[in-house]
Image 1 (spheres, one colour):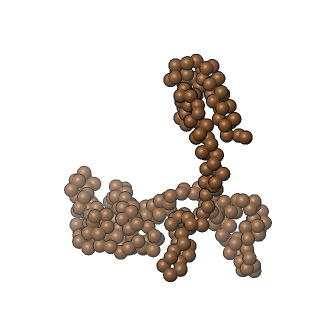
Image 2: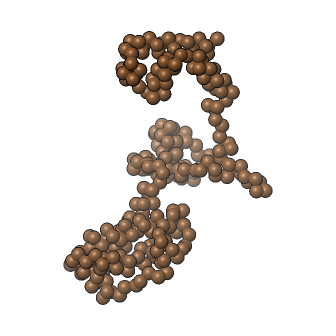
Image 3: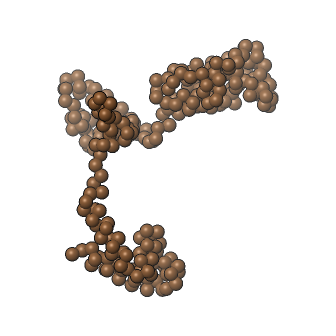
Length: 257
């Protein structure tokens, strides 16, 4: 996150600063339904949001997104503020703004992790830290034995709280020639054997008659039932079933030696 003057299209260097008297007057008016006062009050308190957003500069989150989350917290604080309590608005608003920002940072990940899995992962981290005090080689097996849980549970919980890594993340760099993570990943589905099988399959499909080919397409590419196909093709379901079986036998005999 970068320190920037313009956030969400707002020039933060030009944000107004309201006096306490102005705040009190605007709050009374907005609580009475004055939309203009509400707008001015929100803008007048964006400096408060900005001061809190700066605490999260190092969270690797987008500054605009965090600022928007803070503004959501500000608006919630305005809507729920009770003037009769006798506290300053900023005192009431700060926890709500911080809560909204933290909620965004916690829930804004591309992958959602349940609370139970996170709790398990944090317990695992504590156990690992304890074991590392007397053991330089702490493995998943040792952690699992210490916690009396399955090794798979340890691995799953730790993987769940790991930050996602881009396939284009450099894993090695030598004189500007970067080796990316995706360069280390093989695709077992696209080997020579698979390509040969696909070519044989396409050749076998090309030999089928038009109606049989269409039935297989509707059945296996569009996922339709034989009853649906019979209505679309204009033949009985029994005929569809017979033609499908015949076509599959022809394909198998063409592909298999």
